[in-house]
Image: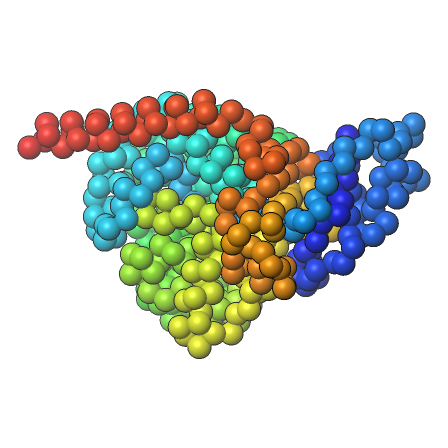
Length: 439
Ligand SMILES: [Zn+2]
């Protein structure tokens, strides 16, 4: 199966973020096969030695006319709690304490497995609709093994590329190493959904739990992701011998210079979620500081309970925050952070994040004829400063078109909306019932 995307303005991100004039993109069997003015010719003739080229001609190439559009690699969201999609905007005015008490303390425990399915599916569709083709789902809603199955099933159903990062339902006796092993085995084969470990310790959980989690993750070859802000967190990881290239620190606001140095030296990576960090008062987003220290740094949406679910908003929040601190980041930097550098944060830089031939064909096509985008002087600046989810016309994940002509086509969004609405109503009502009963 081949797809030729022709006539668009192509932005690639490797080895640098730049516009490729007059380029077409040829996709073959889910991979980027060729990019450039000659990609169309190769699409017609095939290439010697290319699997599937024999006997194939122009007839089996699906042509996507990208005239008037910007073509770029799909966005990589390095930190998101997809299960919260049915709680959208519910925490817009909450402090971190309120969020922990209400969203994690009362609403989360009201989720049934079907609510996790509905929320993960709706959240993944929201991401795809906005051009996010890969997401790290930091999933701390594993109340039972059925919840875990539901979360994974929804990710698979959606067509998104995802890391399902399992978080134990609690510390101590509530830790479920057996479930981490089961998820890792379930997701170990080929497929768009892979496994990771979401650790609560040592910052939000016990040091003993953290040491056990690191042992388990390293045995299973899973990336470990943890929330951490302020002073002491990285220093403690370092002292316990837990830092390493398989560790993703989320947020990092207020890290000491020593912590930044330790994280950089360990090969660890960072996910900055600028909108949430500013709204909840975590501190200045550290995008530019981490990057300057050589730490691979990506952006995350985190939670749609109080911020938007698209990468355009995250890029702009990061850029605005950087401006307040003196501003060294450019629009091109942000586009790289949201794509190829995000891919590196997930350890997927050899598979996604740019248009290098051989990589997975995760692509976004943006219309430029809408009022908020035209006229385009600089396509890179336009994407970062002006674009939004409504401008996303077409999205491909591993070569499969999941959005076309501005509409989601892989999964029925109306069915998903019905499920999400039902779960939203159930979760809120059940949480209120529990609260009332407790009074
Ligand atoms: Zn988070």
